[in-house]
Structure formats: C-alpha cells, structure tokens
Amino acid sequence: MKRKQLRDHHSATPKVARMGESQRLPVRSPRKLTDVQVQCASYAMEALSLTPLRSHFIMSLVDRTRLQLMYYDASVIMVASPVDMSTAEGKAFFLSMVIALRRMNSVDRGFRSIIHDHRKFTHKLGYMATQLGATKGDRVWSNLLKNMVLQTEIGAYVIVEVLFRQAGLVGRLTYVVKARHQDRPTETVVIKISCPSLSREPEEKLVNAARDAAIEIGGESHWVLKHLPKIVHAEDIETTPGSTQDRVASFLNKEASYVDGGKYHYEYRTLHIVILEELFSINKLSCASDFAQVFFDVLNCHKWLHDVPRILHRDISMSNIMYRYHDGAVCGVLNDMDLSSLVADLEQQKATSFMRTGTPPFMAVDLLRTDKKETVHLYRHDLESLFYVLLILSTRHRISYYGLPEAYNLVKRVAPPFSEWFKSSLTWEQLAVAKDNFIKTAFRGTMTINNLFPPDSSFVGFRNWIIRLKSVMSSGFNGREDYYDAIVMAQELGDIEGQNITFTEETLDGKIQYSTFFDVMKSFAGKDLRAPPVNLDTL
Image 1 (spheres, rainbow, N blue to C red):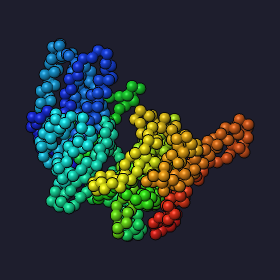
Image 2: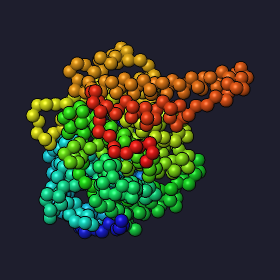
Image 3: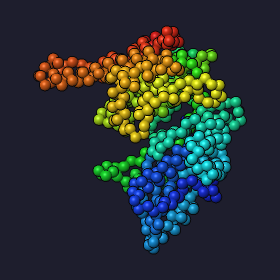
C-alpha cells in the first residue's frame, strides 16, 4: 500500500463563502458560555462529518468586541483565549488573523484535494447552505457528493450514493459511498473513507490475512471466502508537513500537558481510502429464512476467524452484517473489520474504557460497564452482540411487501420495544443496567414474548431463537452472580474449600459459547440451514 501526501491544486481562495467559517453570535446575557461552545462544536461537527473533504475546521466566535478562535480536527479541539478587539493589541491581532486566513491555501483551510472538481463542490456546498439550510434533513445533505469524481491511485470514481456517514468531532469519522468507475461505468464498488490513527493496523491487513489463511488451507474455493469482504484497493493520504494541521500537532506535542502534569501526545491520523467489492445491506432482504441463513453464515465465519487466523471482529451490529449472492444463493458476510484485532494482541494488552469498541445498542453488558476498568474483549461479547442484533431486528422491524422500488429498503422500523437503548441521553452504565435486567429477568409486562412477536410479525420465526438464546445468556449472567455470592459467603464463613470453586469467565462457565449458539441457530422454522462443508471444531 502506497502512502502519499496532500497536494494543493487550488491555492486560490474560492469566492463562495464557506459554511460555518465564521459565526457571529448575538449577545444573550442569560446564555452560558458552554452553550455557545456546544453550538460552535455542532457547526464544526457538521463541517467535519458532512463530507470526508475536511481535515480540520477553523472558526471565529465574535461577541461585540470579543474575538475567540477555535480549531477542530479528528484528534483535538482547541479554544484560544479571547481577545479584546477594542484595544490596540486586539486590533492588531484581528488584522493579522484576517491576513493570515487570506493567505491560506485550500489545504491549510482544511480542504482535502481528493475531489476532481474542487470548485464545483465548493459552489454546490455554498448553494445548499444558503438555499436549503439544515431543514431538509440528512437525506438532502447526503446528496452533496453525488456525481462528484473521487480521485484514487487506481483511477477516478463517480460517487453514486452516500451509504453512511458518521456524525462526530473526534474519531474515525467514517464515510461510505457507492461509486462507479469513471471509465468503466458498469464497475460498481463501495468506497470507505475514514481517519484512523496512524498507530492502528489498517482493516485491509486483517482482511487479507484472513483471506490468505483460507486460500492456504482450501484454495480459492474455501467456504469462508464467500463470507468475507473483498478489498480491491487501499491507500492513505497523510498530512502535509508544514501545513496548518501539522503545525498544530507539533505545537501540542511540544507545549501541551494534562492537568495532572502528564505529557500530551497528539494522535496523528491518516485519511484512509478503502475500495471494496459491493455488498448488500440486510435491509434489502425480503424473506425471514434468508435473514436466518445470513446470521448463521456470520456465526460460522466469526468462529473461523477466531479459531484459525485468530482475529476477533469486535463490532457486531446490524450495519456490519451484509450479504452477497453466490451461485444464486444468499450468503452472509461479516463486514467492516475496522475495529478488529488479533486475539493475541487483546490478550496482552490491558484494556481500558477508552479502548472498548462497538455500537452501544449492540455492545455487550460487560463492555458498557464503567466500573469494569480492565475488561478484555472476549469472543462471547461478540456473541452477545449478535443476540442483540437478532433481538432488535426481529422485534422492531417488519418486511414491507408493497412493491417498493429496489433502491428502497424492504425492512422498516415500526415498533417501540427497546427504544430506550437508542437514546443518546442514556449513559453506557444506564444502558448496561437496562440490558442486564432484560437478560436476567423473565419475559413479562410489556416485554412478554407475545407482545414482542405479535401474530402479524414478519420475524415471528425468530421467536424460538430469541427465547432459547436469552435463556442460555440468562443462565450465564445469573450463574456469575451466584458464583461471586458463593465466594463472598465462603470468605465470611472461613470455608477454604468453598473459596476454591471455579468459574470460566471467557464463556460464563460454558453458557455463552459457539456450541450453544450453533445448537440454536442451525435450523429455522423447522428446516436445517446451509452449513459449511467442514467440521468447524477441528479446522
């Protein structure tokens, strides 16, 4: 994989005003400063996550004669001390700032040169900002990059559709689009653009390692290849030495420190572009048995990854379970290995709350617990996430059969169960408590099995899976509590033998493991599902 640096092809300043470059806020005495800063951060979040074209965002906050500069990128937020522009020193600062901003080229302003017609994009952004505003919703803004040409090392791709964008300020800021090759219009791919840390192993390294292991064992026809993503190309675009972002990083690494005196280290990131073979969202499926086959395929694939190349996925969610067609049959694909890790690396490192990964509504209870400071991500945590995907899909969605165009999702969200799990106001600890209570208690109240699966449910066939999987998980959760209670009682009674009882944390004493999930998921609606042509326990 070849690394390259950003090159500035458009040093001239576009005449169209950049959305959010300067926000003049009215003076409102009752308003707290933190409220204003949150509002400014929301502007920056839109700028950084609306498209993958911004590396950083510079903003000025003006309140009468008070001027304050703010800087945002995917690794840090900086807020400068305010300057009083009524003073001579303040006026000189203001003029210097204006001159410096005017001299900046597009890269220094935070624009990445990965779009072929940068000026066309800038004009489109200005038009949408002034004419459409934010009232039209995310669907309108998702069309911002449509028909734009993305430049890569293997050619130019025309963006057809925005499939996903991650709203945020600090982090990977993943952006996924569907695109076609400019010279070969029938060649459709998916392009994922993100800002991972330079210290993190790229996704393609793990995917290719898994595919190479499969080919070495069974050649190009190895069964697991049907269930792994296929990466066409990957490249990185690093920050230009001497650019605004690079100077900020150098300044922070030299001057900044934490409140407790600890040395601050700026997290360098790269713009990572991955081109993948197109896969299909499970929202496009129209048959419950196909969903079951996809989930069973993903379970088989997950076990193979864990047992053979020793890779743990660590981010099981509805959006990361996809499918492709192979010989006319639906095949589940375990997609998106951005957050995957080698099992050996997980076993050696000391986990912290900052290292935990996943999508909160689908994350395991242990990983959400803030009081468990050293929880290591285990394979049973991914199995627990798979259960939540099954639960959320089957109880909160239905399949639409009303002749919708193929471009529309067939699976629609319709039901309120577990809505609190998706509330942004819910802390991780509160979400952990809600999930823990659901797992350990019987179906009752509004959560009876009949309420969760009414007769007209599209996924009533999953009822048996949910009941049985919840039962084994409840046994594991409650068994762990009983174990710790027994240890405490033995210590209080001085019972040496009682203190020596054991409990297997990795599988919750054998309750949450591959074999229990296979036993439940190997058949659906009375029919056996298609299984791999090998013994997974001996491979």
